[in-house]
Length: 306
Image (tube, rainbow, N blue to C red; front, top):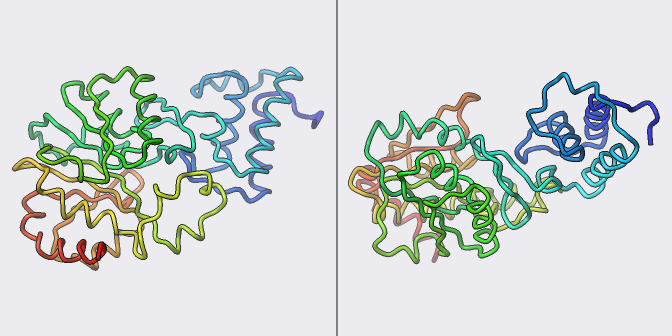
């Protein structure tokens, strides 16, 4: 154990340097070594994530030092994302349980949730919401938390993911979320929503195969989506009009596959959301526009299932 390390700040700095030297990859909730080192140190010390800077000079006892360094070694040797080591990730201001049953919550859709999906909803009335490919349930639960009058359905094909989502519903005491096991819309006949939000798998086969080791701890079915990353997105675009109310809205994340989608469907007026850090591959589209271009969308989606 390095004798020179004494304070909380010392260990955060040491972990940050170690992570950088070892070439770790970041992208699971945090995107840099400093934030991950801070998360692991505070977790090991049973301290809150918003600990004030005045505590940075607090000194660790021997057992605490061992606990912190053990977490650092697991992060380095096993390449486990910090959120899986701590079992917690923050999304839209809420704490979610996270483990390898679902992807670590990290979608920029969190910013939309916190803004009440405005200005995109334009003040329209919302009663029912669908979160397709819910994973840990973070989008559905956060949406329901901030809008307790909404009835939110959270859909996933993975029974493991739905079990984790159930634990998060209980954790956050969210009573207005219903979990549904379904392969996309297949078990949602007759269900109609005012808003559909989805963060489906959208990583290409080539990109998935080239991902750093950290991503191997996540379920591959939450990432992989064909040669251009659009296999699921196109199916969602095809089926969404049947499940949207007359003035319903679809919000969908496709990440780096944004350019491929725009090239396939240049005639569809996708509105690409500008976040605080710029565009993040998330579009908004009206039901009417999906209906108007349904023939072309259906042809593309059908070809994927052929």
